Length: 149
Image 1 (spheres, rainbow, N blue to C red):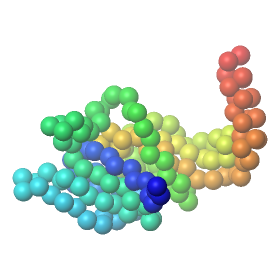
Image 2: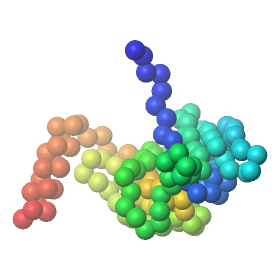
Image 3: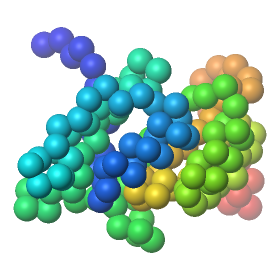
Image 4: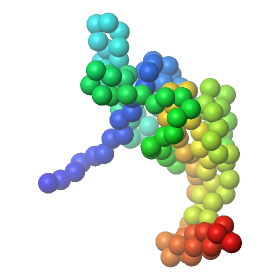
């Protein structure tokens, strides 16, 4: 068996608003959308610089739900960008809520995270240093030991 691609597929309450947010904040472009006669968006695809994000509105009748505001999340979408501080600022201006301000991390990335207006958590970062996995593990262990003390 060959796997050719992996797509993230998210569900939202208002797909038109979510698509507008993603195009404004991330510069994504809409490839296409399929809309039911009643107006509910059944499927859309957005291009994130060559990577596809699939999106639909919630379909509770099929067990497909959108995030609830203020509830824990079970996944995070991570984007590598040129400047995470700029992207996070743009997201906040467009209605996102900040989870973690951008900061430099032990694994060689500056990143922060936010919740988009649809409730999805995004981590946005850019590289500040190349770190070998062994050094990353050393730094991680040191950080965890320091926090346990």
